[in-house]
Image (cartoon, rainbow, N blue to C red; front, side):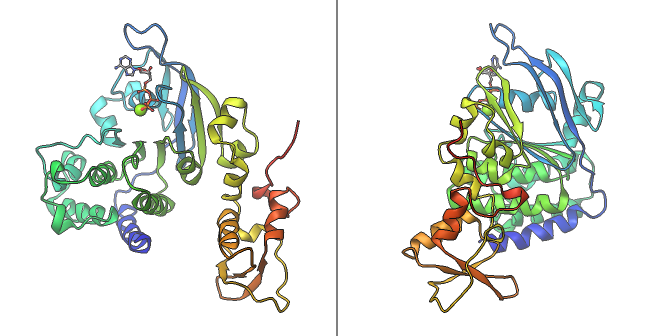
Length: 356
Ligand SMILES: Nc1ncnc2c1ncn2[C@@H]1O[C@H](COP(=O)(O)OP(=O)(O)OP(=O)(O)O)[C@@H](O)[C@H]1O
Ligand SMILES: [Mg+2]
């Protein structure tokens, strides 16, 4: 499943990077304030953060912390109360709203497909507005349907109510990507999708992002999804204030306060291991042991731990991409990492343990 998606992802990006591919733009929220009329507290009192061009910023936080509000402010679906938002250094307030929205792909939380249009027409919305020729639109729609693992001939002419909830959500992602926008806003795009399809969509999206390098703001409730997908994570707390904005590794290593530590979970040491790979571990040399199986060196330390445990604690052989043997992954080797005594490189510092 995921390999088929990878293939589709690369063919889709082949087109996306050809022709009128747009460059990603930096997004800056500058003292953004939003108070809904009639509310006693502002949904967002004062939010500043910058997403560098081509990076994925994940917004996480409890329900009501202002994530959707922030997204809707960025493409001016709702007006700012104060502050400014700059896209590529230019205030969104200076831009005609229609022009701005064509430049920003948006996957909304409740999908929001047009119910009386086919899947094909839904995906083609922005390319049609931009006046693309018919055959180019048709080609792009097919490509995007393949990217989201839907058969263009089977579902292209269906209406949204003839799809499952997860399929609708995937069509929403395809529609947002259609015109290759420099900024993508994704509000829980994979929220209603089962874990297997979700992992494969995440992988497909990351493969696509690797090639097209959009600036992306991505909302999720799933901290594991945030750690996997984000170049940076912005954690909002109730009341719409920013608790921490940093890379996944920084947040796991140094949560700013008890709220963040609680939010990322008691298993943050294990999550941190998910960001290190066997390439970061001092392996034991192979000296006549009978390994229980093989693992690629690219395996995360967390997955390697699970694999060794599943093998009843017996060591596993670690293989280089060319098939060469790198060494043995043993419980002790991994245990050293967990204990903070293993050798991890600069990006894979062992998690802080028992510190005051
Ligand atoms: N149209 C509106 N009018 C008044 N208040 C609103 C409106 N939309 C949202 N709010 C309030 O603003 C706050 C932030 O809402 P928002 O939808 O941004 O939260 P969220 O972080 O996206 O939550 P969730 O995780 O549940 O989607 C909430 O207190 C909400 O009740
Ligand atoms: Mg929301």
